[in-house]
Structures are given as C-alpha cells and as structure tokens.
Amino acid sequence: MAIRLGEQAPDFTAETTEGQISFHEWIGDGWAILFSHPKDFTPVCTTELGYMARLKPEFDKRNTKIIGLSIDPVGDHQRWVKDIEETQGCTVNYPMIGDADLKVAKLYDMIHPEASGGGPRTAVDNATIRSVFIIGPDKKVKAMLVYPMSAGRNFDEVLRLLDSLQLNAKHTVATPVNWKPGEDVIIPTSVSDEEANKKYPQGFKTLKPYLRTVAQPK
Image (cartoon, rainbow, N blue to C red; front, side):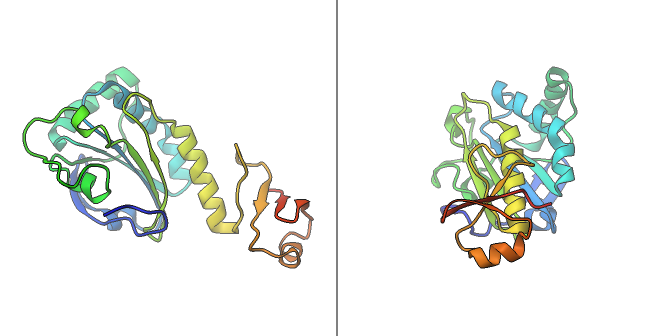
C-alpha cells in the first residue's frame, strides 16, 4: 500500500536492538521519527546513525522518539553499533529495527512488494530503503523524505521540519521558505482577518490578502 501524508502510519511488531516493540504502543502519546537504511556496515548510513545519536537530546526536548531500521538482523545491528561508536565518537542511544524479511520496508512502501527477503542482499538491492517518516501523536504520517544512497541525509533539516510541524499543530500557522525557529510565521488563508485580529492583538503584517505574517507564537 502507498503511504500518504495525513494517513495513519502502519503499525507493526518487530525485533529491535532494545527488544521487541509494537510500533504504535512504542510511540505512545508523543511524536516519532522512523528512518531507514538499505544495509548494515554501509558508509553513508554509519555517519547518519552517529549524527542522530548526537541529536537525540534535541528530539527528546520535543517529545519525539527516534528509531532506525536496516535490512539486516538485529545481531548484525549490534555489531554495527560498535563500528558507529568507534568511527563517529558517540553511542547509538535509540533502537534499531531488524527487517531482514523486508516486512516493515514493504509495509511502508519503501521497496517493491514482490521483493524477497531471503538470501544475501546488497545495499543496491535495497537502494530505495532510504526514507524518513515523521509521525504525530495521532499516529498519522506528517512528513516524508526520501534520499538516494549516495547523499547523506540532512538531519538538521529533519529537526527544523519537526519544529514547523509541531508549531502548526499547536498554533495553526504555516512557516515560510527557509524558516528557522523564532522567525515570523504565516497566518493561513483559512483564518479571516477578524479571527487573526483576535488571535494576534499585537498585530500582524499584510503583504497581500493571502500573505500575512506574524511573530512566531510562544
């Protein structure tokens, strides 16, 4: 099945480096980020997993759990973690899903539904399993990013995107191009001027009837 924004993230049970989880139950009442990898012991993914470990305190502040996935058994993940710690200088401090049978990859439409999980598979066989899913407390998919194997993901951008999504969820505002936390935001066209005046008594700026900006709500 295709994964679409605004639809419920598929639930699943899987083995991870921190034991078996039921995904929706594991998410709980917060946010979650699921990011996938085509193979263990691959160079680009090694750097990504290490960087996410360093960023984890920032996600914690935002009530957001992070979880990795790779198309290899959990036992391989546990050996890979040692390489990540050695080369990236940080401990992997979040669970990693073992998906050797491609169950989750297929469930999240990251690989052809007829792909076989049996036998040896290379990273190239799993090249499309390079996605990031941001999932809200309602268990719905809020954002998706897909990268090729050759380009390391920008997880600072994932954090910025999460900030934008959480701001929208709390205050019903949109964020302009290249927005950073603390900068002005956009009042959606679904909010009338009358409603905006009540909501923002400090005032807002009207550039066009459809383009109104206001200081970021606290």
